[in-house]
Image 1 (cartoon, rainbow, N blue to C red):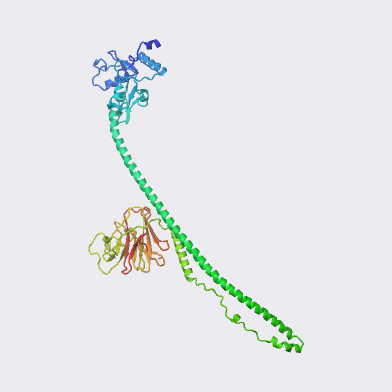
Image 2 (image 1 turned 90 degrees about the vertical axis):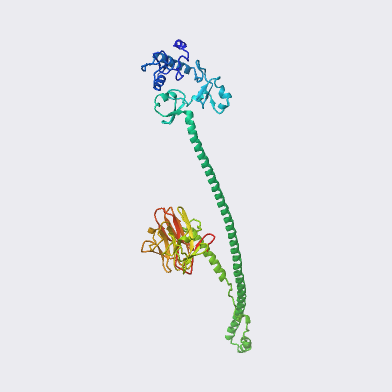
Length: 531
């Protein structure tokens, strides 16, 4: 067997089409040998059936059978080379006797011997072509079926294939060279990379902005903490000073009263002792049988008592503290702090106060708007003469310029002693012309104070709402995502009424204000403009 292998060189056992050792070799009628798959693919791609080497033309495609002896020799040659640990890659440029390749170019998808790799080493055109060890270059870059180098891309199957695959199962598919497909894919990669660069810049910018906001929030919190701590320290010192002064004054006056009282008690107790002694003397004389002795001591025993002016004086032992104003002041401070605590513990919306302004384009013609668009009241004369599709013409209302499409928003209104006001929200598409019911069904979510009753503008009959005592400031909280509008009593922090839609608001919503009072305006409040 070894002698039979010695009769053939590797060149003689190599297919002239795939340039690899024969795999199922067949012989053409003209005497040349090829791999069965190689010659089949060659003839499938040509309209004329010819020999690839001698170009002999056959009238009909020959029926070829595998040369089993030749196939066995080629198989044994492969086994012998594998047993010897050889993994030879041949130069793709050499003609005739091929030499082993020393490197492979991933860009050219070809292997070169030492002579034919020189252009890649010395020519600037090939400077960016990566060269690899030919055995390493073949790993993962050869066809699992035909053991040929992957150099074609099938766009139907979206994978790399070899030249024989093109002639067989992929012959009806759209195929291009890997270099051509790389160019197209490279553009997509470049586009994706640019998108990544843009996204990275956007994320970096957002990270930077978030860090700035976080730093601003931290600085604000630190400043507020420092300011509040300073105020609390001052309050604490003031309370300590008041405690010291007030309690010290009480103690001082009490000490004076106690000292004065103790002196009076001592004097009275001395008089009491003296009186007791004289009484005892009188009792003894009264029972004494010595008439002479009795008469002789009578003058002394019945001598008038000495008048003690101090004992007769009215002793004032009352305290004159004058603490009424101090008590009132401390009670007010306590009540204010308890009110703030209740507000914090209530369901008060954790949202900053929105700075909203009135939109004169929507104002009822008789409404008077302040120059800063923060106040509104009813007037005697027409204030707006130009008609507008956005203007209320029956209801004495006006909308805010600011509208909301999503998120959570909170604003405050000072209603004061107004005898007729409406506060709430309205959808952008809601009716404004003519007389109609202001209800959630028509896009209105509001409270109405008529001077004696507070009502929610629900589908008739209107819902009665328990009016807080002296309601002067109303907070409105709008949650677009939850579909909820909630009203708060700012002074107590308690909830007045809530419209719960049960699903998110999809229409744009605007703050709504209405008044029929000609004397007391509604005032839109902000953090800076807080009454």
